[in-house]
Image 1 (cartoon, rainbow, N blue to C red):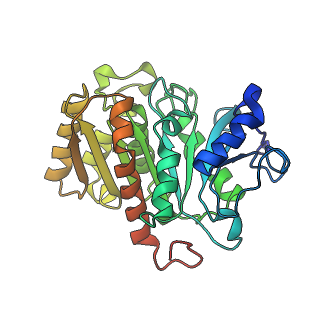
Image 2: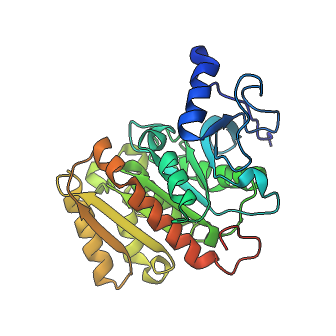
Length: 312
């Protein structure tokens, strides 16, 4: 088995330390290499931040499931560097079809998290935004690429070994937008011992007739379709804290509403929100704070008694 490999990705390249210094001054967020090999810029170039400053790292690691190196971004909250014994819950946020690992950062996720943590509105947490390409976060049929195992096996184990996480389902949340919302539901339902909280934002729930070829035949499709999975095992679905939201002008609205009604009829507790808007960046940017409040509260409700939990 190949070992995880880590490398720094230059975030600003030609603009260098001028942009870095401005970013630190404006946001308080420090970008680093994440590998224990020192900061991305020297102390003489950028004023050293306080020990509680949040950090964003862009890294790669080797995925056995995909047989290649994959990029991802990690957000470490303020205080992470100054609490060597503290452990943190983890939020995995998946991008949509046509997006990439930076999609959630562009929606303001990391900036909003820093603000909410600073104001004690959500607990400190690690946030991971992986690259999923156009694979729908699913293991493809007929021995195709294993985008599901890439997340639930390779990525989760890498994050737990690299960072001071709380390595249990109660300390892990997974969410996503559009394709990522489908992925969050499917991955959690198929891996109930890995995650306890699910967020599906503007979820794209495809019928089999709309699905890509890699969803396979009817049997394979149903084992990776959130609607089918919830119909099959009500008790399993009740193990999760679930959030669903969608814009009233979203083309996926009817499918999402039908899924909400299905969960209601099955007696499965969940949060359902319909907001004004469509299937676009403006919609997700407008509600990123709502999403973080949900994840923070859901995780904190299960972790309050946990030993070493920094949110106590």
